Image (cartoon, rainbow, N blue to C red; front, side, top):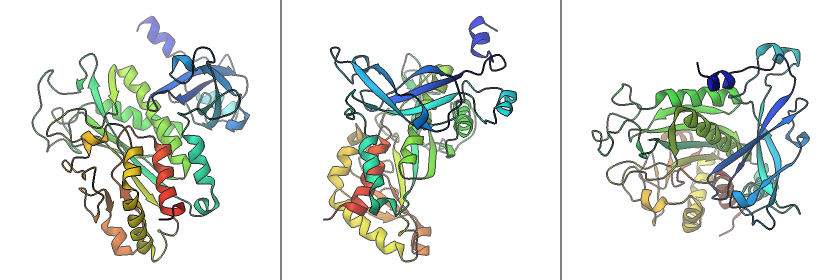
Length: 368
């Protein structure tokens, strides 16, 4: 084993009670994830008790060099699957974690949210009394593509060439069908260790493409957990030497794109007669289709073509069990007369704070 490997696997929890807190935030593109670590002296479970911190916003595209300080406000705490402590220290301190990944949002020194801080506005919507009372449930299906490093070509594909056509890869098994399962399983386990409600995984239709699902979760917690799950996946692919892509259409042609289908229900929709409220939501979402598309991620026009299990980007549609519609309502929901619906329009690189809060705003607060 190399010296680097030895040091990476070194467990120092028996000789120190210090805790490493990895502060995670969203970078200047709105889709990149940044982080840095600091040492804290005592266990913390409440993010409000963690110190605020700062970073050089001029190096992340979030400030100018003449006024580069951006402030991090801790918002959520999870267990760190990479620097986990040993079980003995866990017992001594009555903890089930030792090292903390901390999700933060970013503010100017004067306390104003910076433009890439979409969590701030989302929190306002979710805290609105008419929204909070509905106990919103979300389940987000995050698709992504694993690429071979240096060549940026899907994992398992012959370099410069193509595999056999789509068909055997979705939920497939075998060395010629499933590429990168070790990465996917490592991410699955790491999310569960961290406290992320990762409810499942599957191989997707295009080879080298996978999906994990976060939820069901209430309100803003769904977006928080999706961002942390993305961060964990970035770290695992870094270790594996594989490039992670959230591009909505990484390969042109007869190949499926990558989305982030968002499942949603309100308390009223889950109650008897909720199907009528779901149909009313379809009317509202149809009227605001252009606004939603504009907020649902970059490059979606390359994915939403009306082919490959997508609707056309310019036309709103909904249907029962229809994966070619903008929004799918499940047969079980129709049969029960209550339940949820799936918005299939968000793309893989969407900001979950924007998408989840916008669905809530349109279906509950917006008046046509």
